[in-house]
Length: 597
Image (cartoon, rainbow, N blue to C red; front, side, top):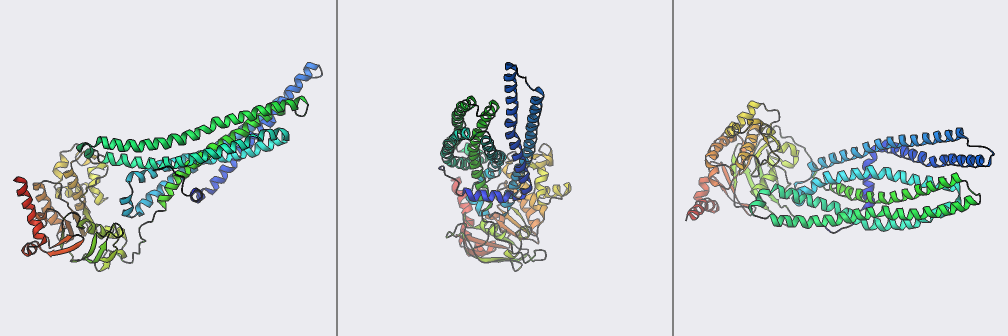
């Protein structure tokens, strides 16, 4: 994406300050100790100048024979200076420790807020946004914010305090020399404004492109086998390189402009340093100021230009923090799922289901389900069949309240599912989806995901019922075999068996089987079908299948096409009807004959 400024810098910073309002006491401590550290550090050169003056005057007196150096006075001054610098270091340590706590706590709580937000986000958000971009907000953006916060806030306080304090000290020494030193300020301010204006958009683009490239990497590695199978390595590398080059452009421009400030400001500062040294020498020659004052003033000039340089760097850090914070708060401000109204409980509700003129579309104006009506009695096994894209899986997602219907209603036990809490609705179902999903962990842990307090005996019984026990025992470690992150160390069919075992162990009142046997061989399918028949006995079950031979014993078959029910009945009734279902059923065998021919 092209470089651009944060959409609302001030608004983002207000949200950031509001979020950090929980650390008010800590921020006050940080401010107090940061100011204290800076003040003690500023007073040091003025006190030290007295030692320089005492040494110079004592040396002159010794040379002229009128006196000598007062070493006791010099020692007292040096000890006082040492004490001031020690106090400055102690204050700096305290504010650094508290600031580290605040920044890390902010990151910790932002990650927690994002994690909670993810749980409240509608499924439609993840249909439109890449997983990698969401992960980038949790990792890269939060880390960037934390680092920038730790560096920026303290630096901002100390730099502003230093500028004010040094200015006061310089004025107390000599007003004319102070005016000479201030000549560098307008030049510094102009340079800061130019750099900030140019670097701001590059920092935002860098964060956005980082999220985009993370999405590409996550997608590519998740589909690595597909990329290899279709020989699309060059295209993947080309797309990655294009994004990486744009990230490189934004990155080097932002870092170059940020780093350019230091040498430019040093040059401007050195000019002021030279001017003050010459002018101070003239004043000392006239006896207007002491040698110690010149030494202290030269130190203050250096201390005065340094915080201006630091403020320029802080401005870049704050821009980077704002870019990261904006992406985080954009995510946290995304609309959540509709509020729960939860006026009913699922505990004693009957498991009959009614679809009453249901309509739904993933996008406005593009309906997937037009006018779906059907009634399923408690304990029935209902098969939903139809060509790809007919809306079968969508109906299941609506039943589970992964999405909300646009029109009509779905009722369980005569109660609209929207009157139940989403967690309660989902707690009624055990499900096996077409897309199997296993977590990184042992096989036993994955099966026990259906019942977290299950014993090893219950886990093994569920595995036997799903015909998975035999292959599990052949793996190293058996039920303690660790499945890797993407479950690539077990086959697709074995994954399917494990998800079926998970559903068996959950032992819920209602079942959803979306192509549950699509990835197993025919022999295993027959055994699983028998296990499923036993499991579905007395339970309301929804079975989605393309292989119509697997649902011949269903109590009711709903035939869908283009989001509507075109036929319904038993297998025998629909075949006798000779309509759409019969055509689908017979096409299985025709396709096989055509393939053999």
